[in-house]
View 1 (cartoon, one colour):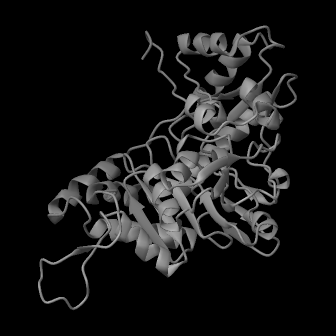
View 2 (tube, rainbow, N blue to C red; view 1 turned 60 degrees about the vertical axis):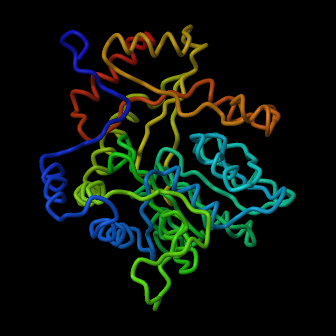
Length: 385
């Protein structure tokens, strides 16, 4: 609370009594980590997206890391991703020994622009498209352009989204056109496990490797006479998720469709309010896309309105409305400038997007009065009548 005003963050979790009860009951099973509810949650996610395997891990970054690690990169091999993403999308390529490269975004969708990804990129091994803000890219089109490149979908924002491939609706995570997809269950995502992530794939060998890598690279050989015996055959990590986290995930998953429905209702109100205002725009959802709306990003021409973005954000904060910027272009980070320098002139759409982007409150617990308050305060701050 700020004074008597209720604070509206840009995103937050929706935890109900039933969620808490599910967690509480999980403690009665005798399992805390890697228990039966981990497998139950994995199977539930696999059914929801329509995929063969789902491997739950400690967070979305761990999911990305393990997929890239399992694939492996040779010396100088390259992975391409979007610059409009959180650091983990490209950091995970580096963790696995690859060289990250970026390709500019599409100015209408804010996703990576498939048409401008360079097919002549030397030593290209992977492309990791990011379904930014919940809006899916056309993975079929990407795979057709790069048939010999491994596709890893970063769907941290996009659980519940789908696109039409000309024949059917393709759920994000089903891996029809990719080797693997990752999701995040951070508290501001569509559903949460506190922290957590999951990898989906139809590849049996990859799934086995991922399960091994998430638990120190250990296996228990079948038929070994000693019950305590294990072997570490790969250099893995402790990326396991707990049983009670997955209990929360199972409870949240039952409400996912209703969460997405409410997010889309809120976005519809925002779109109606800000449509056709000179100096304000937002991403479009095409007929072949179904956006699950993790975020709603406005592009505001702050120069036109005679205001700095920081000033705009601080004025809204004074009114109890919290906003965020998603994202600073990854290639602008000091580490990347030092180790993997890119020319900012190669990313005109990303540069223009970054000047104007602002994420405004969007989460299922918002009521229509909250939405109206956000709209009113944004218009008042920008002096829009």
